[in-house]
Length: 314
Image (cartoon, rainbow, N blue to C red):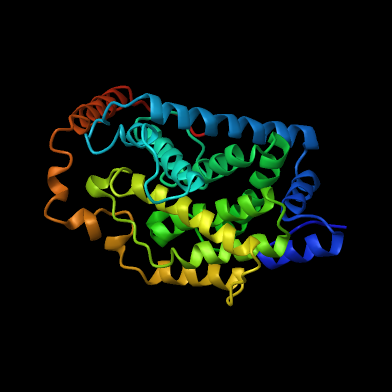
């Protein structure tokens, strides 16, 4: 039989028909469609999990500010303290999510899951849960598979780009992926993973993409923390048996339609929202990153134009 899926409903159906988990459906689809065995797929996922760990460590260890001066050192600031109101898991998820996004802003290696701007949500939430419950690597891999199935459906049926769907498409998708991953890792069934997706995504609908100075720092870094926190909330609700009244695929369709209806000033153009506030233009006043980059582009263009010659078409 085929394990091909186009929708989240397809994954639930395949899981129930074969008495397997959400993540197992995704794994079997991978094996069915790509020239790799199970060991190779798992090895690739474990490599990405290793990068999760490294990016968390980099974000906490390297406390210098970014070139813009807008972020850096906040993960370490949190890591050195204890939660005042949040649970231990939620606090760790928040800290780790910020660490990874700060690492991204400093050009450290990260896993775009699904995007670089939302790269802290999955590592933050999944690592916090895995540490607290002492989950083995195989269990975390299954969670990653569930998240990748969610991401695949979102990317193919809607979008994961802030320039198309706003921040709901980036942080929203990442939060929904993380929620499904946690449910899978904690033994929930496929339907629970779908409800976790829905609950997380519904709480992100309408979120705009308004990066100050056009950089993936403000408000992006802290939104990763919010996305990780919402993922935990959604997973907890789904595992408790709470269901979304709106099915997952309809929630996804709503996200896509909202994104299309959203003003372009609120979709990664840095022309609206927080990017258009009075304080925003001063945020990168101390940054010297643009001028050297502009000069490098000018130099490269000059070099290419001087080396231009007629070349016959192949």
